[in-house]
Image (cartoon, rainbow, N blue to C red; front, side):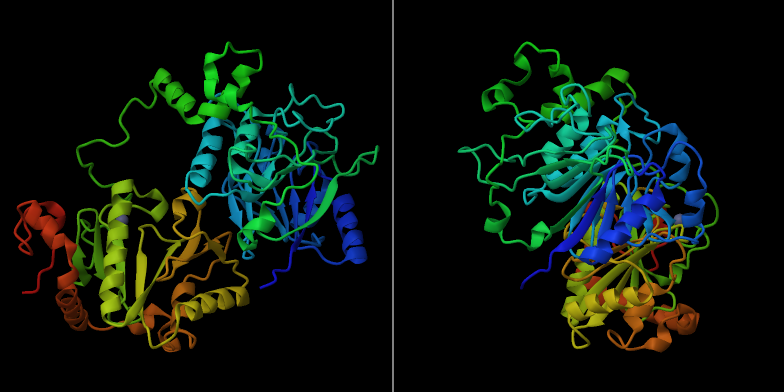
Length: 561
Ligand SMILES: [Zn+2]
């Protein structure tokens, strides 16, 4: 399968010169064809208010290409970036967010880190901290399959990037730039790393990510710093390149070393690194410490302030979080429709969906009040996963595969919808295609996220999103910016391509009497019983299975009379 390379543009500080930039992009596209994306690093906005932006914001003018930008680097421009998790700034112009990974439908992985370095917590909205960098590293680099990412976007240059390389001109990379960005680049192994802020263009010779003769060959990294838009010296501010996402590349092709490849600028010689901090620290050593022990350093920092001295995992079970007002889904609340509850675990419970797409459409819900999967504590997540796996096996035995989705938008209590689809209806790929196609029709960007990756790594607490998980573990994710159709997941599943029950796409049209609901719930409970892991739990705890009445949540266990 020959993958067509993506054609991308990267740009340095725009500083509010939107017309100059976009006119240039138009001219380039006219001459050499359309590009897929424009990525902007550095200051997107200028520090002085301008009328130009209003025209883009209000839609009088429009960016000629899908443009992704990093956030503020100073107090004056923080106001333009309202949502720390990223948002649409104008048509075709999207703020990526403070930090994270963006995976395009092509499979291209772009890691972004907004702002400039600050070592003192808490950091203002235009800075990143050691904690931000270590969380990005932990989220991405700790899996054994991690090979690197396609693109890294930062505003500051990485400190020391000039080591072993060609001259960086007037910029002294031993003094300027961010050591945290260096540590990030070293861990992430991006194929391309773009930065700005120094008002100059510098394309470093590609550097190696492996130690020669000690490690297997890995792909090289190209670091490119870009100048500011419309600078009088006509330094390069726009960089065009084409790229095939690494996950689609042949391994041998990916690790081919360019002839001019150099040593890694951030890596000390092997001997020095292994000795680590035992060597008397030269002046720059203190700034380098994050290269080797980012997490350890942080750990020490925390304990010295005493701020996090409380254990994050208390041994005593905590009382589940309480809702601010009445909640239909908190198990202990009087509003919950108890006759629909079909199984109760330690942290979660199962209930039949009201007006479900089928008689066995169930919800996995936390017993306590949590808004989304992102907010769950580890122990609750564990039980959610256990329910998911158990339901998968249960439905598989009945010739069905599970589709799971969550919409964290205009909802207060997490509801994981589990919809069984008869295997005879369609294949998993058909389900995936149906979601992708119907999302496209409604201009919803569904991104495929790496298998086994956790929504927590992709969505930050408070961010609105929708995702669907297929029985293969594949997930499609959409970060909701505005106006997401509330019934989207149902509509796709009800459509001809999957369940072919279009009349049921609205739950309100599927309501049945309470007696019928009770009958369905009893039937589900009986069918599910052989798979019910909570029975063992209760026996372990010395509780009477199904009897209820021992502790508060189980009081609500609705055993059939
Ligand atoms: Zn609740």
